[in-house]
Length: 370
Image 1 (cartoon, helix red, strand yellow):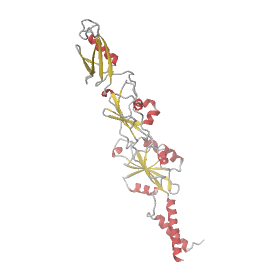
Image 2 (cartoon, rainbow, N blue to C red):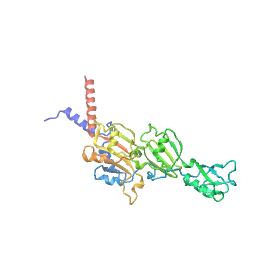
Image 3 (cartoon, rainbow, N blue to C red):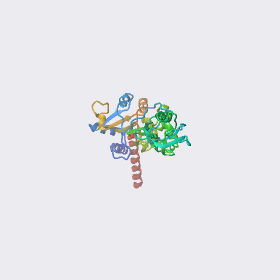
Image 4 (cartoon, one colour):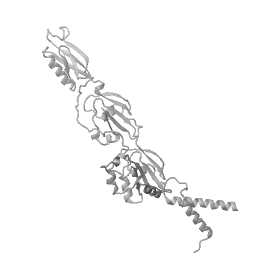
């Protein structure tokens, strides 16, 4: 079989065009990325995502994680009120004795207060002095004051009313219907109860994150995790601050993907296969299904001696969507915040583009000749 001169020229031109890196396209080829990773010694590490890699990858440190100390464990609390510093109490003393130091004959009761509980947890009672009542229930505090009064007024009886102060309350700062300070009516108040009292979480927040500031410690979790796991509905403490914010974590999608965008995390954990689904999959006519890459940069600390981690700080994970192992492995690989999901171009798309360019050129030349 003979090849015409025109066909030979067309074949040579096609070969030259496809070998040329200047053809317009939207992403790199997988082979180009692998070549760069091999050439730049000490710069990149390349890992195919397989079943065998997953246990190794799970032992590597997480990166770009949200700054938090996890989430406090749920513990049982008191159902009743507990007096704390900053609270105020009103004490009413009843005494039927004719020679009472506390009341007159015409008025058999005397009201003291409101009395503010000092930072030392004490209140001052005339003829008795300071009585420590912080950490007690109102009933226990009433008994403590009455026991002290018995020494000077054996027949005296005491009534006590408590009003919680700011130090015995929780502040709900943002992300709810009614931000404000809410008194603790007991020690068995959970964080969901506080959010409910504050008007509930704003419905326009994407994957709301609940943050709890307790002293110098910051805890964080998703609202969904509190709904789905009642054991995580931790009890709040006096002085806690609660903030509800949108999840700020994101990853980037580039190349021959369904869409190129900054994509926010819609849930606590996101797998590579879920990330590919979020970006609309890969483009049927352009993408290489054997070359979906996840680019990730680890901190230098991840390479410290004695730690299990990658070989280099810059890591490329390659996912093959044409095999069952690649699909299952992608479903079990976690995407980290600020990862880049790159759908590489198929080599076939470059050939198709070259043919299109040549066909257009031949057609133009024919029209000019005619």
